[in-house]
View 1 (spheres, one colour):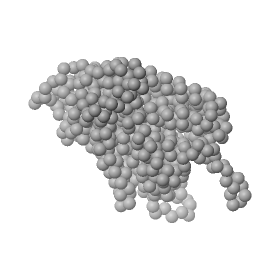
View 2 (cartoon, helix red, strand yellow):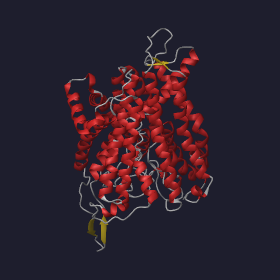
View 3 (cartoon, rainbow, N blue to C red):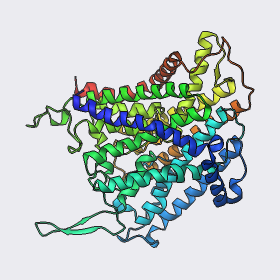
View 4 (cartoon, rainbow, N blue to C red):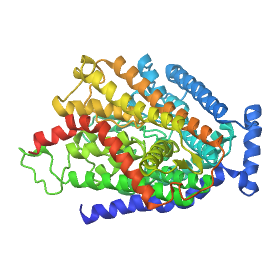
Length: 562
């Protein structure tokens, strides 16, 4: 790894980590103000006045979960209606037409689940009403749902049987966290040269006298929440490779920090709510080690020149430049690829399909493990599943009582954690196998062999991790309906199963009598526990996904780089 690449990584990851500490304190104040000074409670009363009767009652885990699911069902319906009727709605200066029904379903699910998988090009298919009223609105409330779910789980693990009120938490996350940060980032992006207008496409005449239509719109506002909410869906089809969506090196740095800062801060918020900051620090270090390891390997593997240029008279002394935005530098692509898949963001600033095979494996691993920082809120929820398994396995290995935060981990909690883990792997491997064995998958590939399998595997990995990035190379115009329906169902299941089961675990633990720590208690605030957690994650991930990796990117590596 070059010195410039190291500085670039330190700037983004180090800057995000430093900023996450004070932001985590602010998140605790915003989401759990019960023990705070009066400011938080004044906001609670204001949100209750806005929300009415639904916001007045405290909810146990079942009631909280039911409210969360009901809100998402309603927001899905509203999104479908806006997309289906966009040709009749205002804010359509470029006269965008109707959308395919399966695409409407896929897009609505994608944005409700915080995935932002896009089987369309935004500037071609969507009106401003759809971009702002359906998609950007979902980028706020889907991210707020994740933060609310984490806050509720943390309250349960702190021993509270009442986990708060979902509708109040939703407003807290939206208006006290996401909206202020999005306004700040959007202003900075406008200063960085990003468009922000409701006017239609610009018509320009080139030096050759040819008229050119240049798409534009409220890009800065859309991009700010796209990154902060770990949504990732771009205003333009090329996402953050498009100069209007990422104009300069410094907007690239700002967007990269925006991707990671809230997921990192959520770890500190959790620690403050449960009153275990040392434990939160251990988990943060484990997450950071996994992410930095993949970043290091990704940048290293991408130093190898691309095989596609070997027969061309091109000097290749700075690594693989295929599919890269040179204004960002050679290292920016692989670093962003890891960041965006460590956080379920899914935006891109380089063509992932052009990455070297083992570089492309790094973002896949991030989505397979699905635990280091992750989506806002839900990233730590996914890590909690691994924590439960690590505590149980460690307790069984050393003969100590498996306890977490003073409450015993028993068969019920372990079963739910195992189901959550297996559901993620099944949705990836099962659907990838189905499409790889049928014309639904084989007939749409622009590449055959190991790389073609990697493209199918990546699509379902991205869907199941609620990530939304794509290897591309898949011809979406063939068998459109099967791809839209299959990935839509995967996104839906993989969004709500990992929320439902951990909340059930937290509710079960909250109902148990806390046990006093003794010599037989397995501590979760030591480096030993951190190592055990790290080993658990790596072994479970390797056992589950190594065979698929061997058929895809690893096989491709040995095929071309013998």
